[in-house]
Length: 140
Image (cartoon, rainbow, N blue to C red; front, side, top):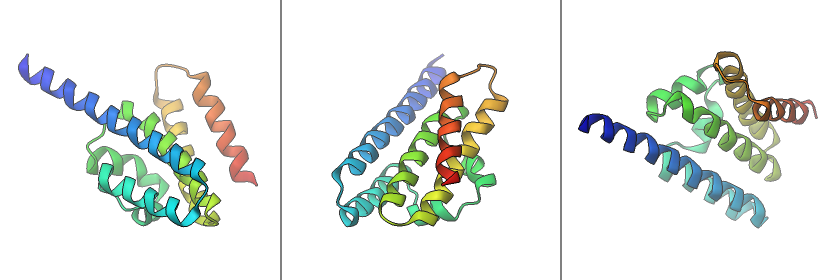
């Protein structure tokens, strides 16, 4: 029982870390200073997930889920938050004129959401809307 409580606390802490990261990345997006924002983006990924943004960009989309689940010891239910983080990261990169890199990251977000849509037992209209939004962004 004690071991189960410990695991539940660990899972909750990971969820909190992802929520903090999302809040930081949304704050970076609103600041508007590209050079400062890109550095903050790098620092946030490095400090919270021990992942370099450049490394994140290079990971093939087909390996992104496994990468987060194994390297960062996240669980499947964290993937929706990861997809949100990747979406904000991709949008930030595009706003810093790194359009190609931003699109790579957006494709990874889309890949995760489509994976969740096909494997989840729960249908999510919110997820469907995010998928459509990303598909539309990637068309441009």
